[in-house]
Image (cartoon, rainbow, N blue to C red):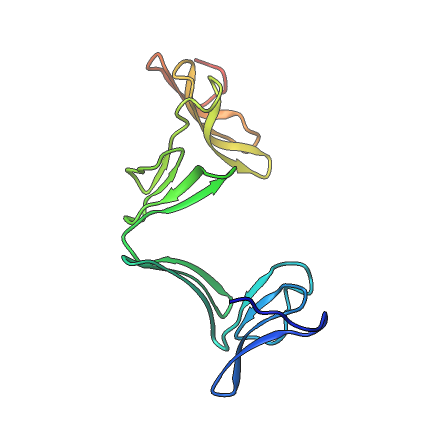
Length: 178
């Protein structure tokens, strides 16, 4: 089936029970549940889904349903099945997952803790795997080198006040006094 619109300025409209349910504008925007393209006109999207209380985009297959949902000021990703949510870029490179258990994995597809960060060789030796920054610098850091300083808790200026080393030394107090 091919539909043509005889005008360059008109819309293709789909109705049920005399109510417009969907339209395709002459410039290619698709609206479901809306007759005006708020975001399309600002070049922010080609598909707009509107609901008076919820905007829901459902993705379904034979085994499960998944939803993108906007309710009030809240936005939800809902994986209706028992599967994993994958965050990817560069086509298909997985950067982060949320497993059905609720565990979050960065650098791993199978997180075994609430937050599982795995550099798996993707960082240069000695790189920091995890860091908490304050307004004046690093407050907490975990290193991936397995030699020298492995773990540190820092004061507000970024200097270690507690440090764990690979040679089983634990230093607390004055910086660089091991």
